[in-house]
Image (cartoon, rainbow, N blue to C red; front, side):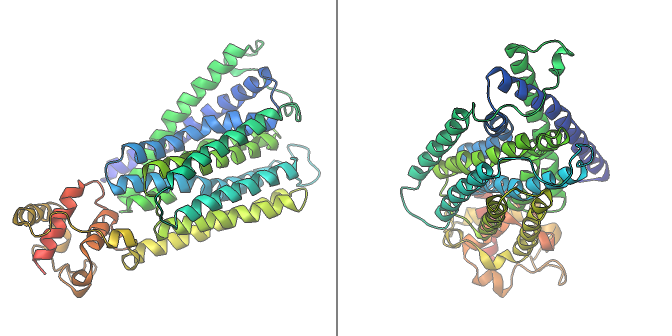
Amino acid sequence: MGRPQVIVTLLLFLLSAVAIYWACEYFVNGVEWCGSHMRLGSAAVGAVLAAIGTALPESSVTFIAVVFGRTTAEKDLGVGAALGGPLVLSTLAYAIVGVALMLNRRGLDRKDYRVQIDHRRLGRDQGLFLLIFAVTFTLGLTAFPFKPLFGALLVVAYGFYAMSKMGNQQAETSEGNLEPLKILGGKPSTPGWAATQTLLALAVIGVASELFVRQLGSIGAFLHWPPQMTALLLSPIATELPETMNALIWVRQGKERLALANISGAMMIQATIPSALGLFFTRWQFDRSLEISGLATLAAMLFLWLVFRRGPADARALVPACVFYGIFAVLIGWYFVHRWEHVPAADHARANPIAGRADAVTSGAAAYREHCLSCHGAEARGDGRKTPTLRGAQLRKATDGDIEWFLRQGEAGEGMPAWATLPESQRWQIVSYLRSIQ
């Protein structure tokens, strides 16, 4: 990526972030009026209406990857996105709400840092999420033939959750006074106009989020990050940006019940629907990086459950949730630098479907010259310093599955790009060629 491309990427990155925030201003205003016309309380508005709308971008990422992905790498991106969303929400989003409440305390005329929510209800939501996520995480550590049945149970679980929130619509009234519907310029709101504004804002959020994700993907490629590392570290930040923006807007208005209900509801969707898609269309088998992501999410959720369970929450108590994301980032960075030693068992055992074919070696040599020669040299011996030899003992000991996995994932710490964009057949041809020169 040249300098002009980098500048364009950064400009699009900033413009898309601004567009998301601007659209979220209209979305939260519209969805509140939709809830008012439907006579819903703030819990149902935030946890169901707003959460379903803003969860569409990340759910679509998983849906497209796991349903239409043709390779293992593409499906892995979807699984990584399904796990990355809950991680970002349970760590960064909650911490940002805590910081926003602290900074807006005087503007909201608050005497203390207490979060004005029903902590018992939110604590129950966190406990339910913790239970469901623990089940989906455990499924990723095991292998058995009827996993898709658990996907169906996850869909049913979300249905019951949404119905319970909608069924409690009389238990909690709307929060605070509603600002006039923006699209009408102060005129009285109607159900039709409220729905129109909400859907238009949601469309802008979807387009801007897609643009934002693409720029983060370009940044990841510029840094030579493998696709799964981008999916785990960068993509979830982009796809969860609408929920975070909504939360900031609602906190600024002193409506933290809506803010936290939106985050909590989005987490529940993420723990069920995208995970169900993964169970339906992939083997749902975690490698070490996904295990790290899942454990960090479980730790963050246990922390939050304890915060809300012990009594009225303090905004300052939410801020340490971001520490779990920091720990995750450090561990995941270390893993991708050293992951050659941690190839998943299923990939390690994969056989080269074109092993022993002379045409595969010939095609692999051509692919090597096109993609690998500039770094590893004509004889694949590297430069003796940063670029390693491809004729060493490590490669000779590796299985064909190890080598294909390494080509697919890359080596971020050593500048090795991820070649997941190459057709899988071409990666196996390169494996055949490398085997022929040992």
